[in-house]
Length: 257
Image 1: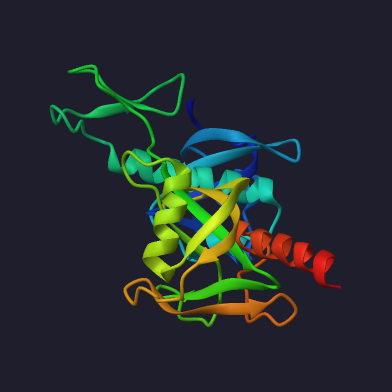
Image 2: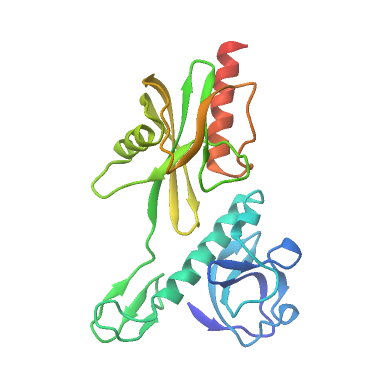
């Protein structure tokens, strides 16, 4: 899987350093290896995009390094491959030595894994499952401003799945902890790889059941019910949160217009 880039190589270049991407002019580099001074570097083939190979290259920090968030509103396939590259780059950087015996490790030649030649331990990239849910109460959506987002964006509730929980239990717990309400009629919608830093978002829709909003100030700045045709600033297109909101708005329009 690991190879040295030759002058004739071309494609999309995911140049990663400590969970950041090289995005000259805000774009993923595309073209020949020579054009981007990548000849002789070590690379991993991540997949294909629009018929061309997508390469992961780990390098020291360059100018124009940025978060993969800049690609959220681009083509989903390219965002997903870039996210995979960032996560794998960080995985290889953080697993140079075996956690059991301390000896150096090497990348597997057959799968995304790191191998210890001393104790034979095998490590895989870890993924943290998350749940995210849009909650409807008649013609209104529950939207909140999160502590970690100071840009005025209102979004749906989300959180990490804990050890021993089902996804459904995680949704109910997170909603209760963050907002103080209970929900019903929970149903699965979709999932989205979310490389911030290594999550998999599992999206649901639900209906309000009971309780008054009582936010957790450690998680939320505010929360409230917003009528479907009078919404505040929302997450950007391309996020599963935005999809949940738009799907809920479509349901409300069908029922109330």
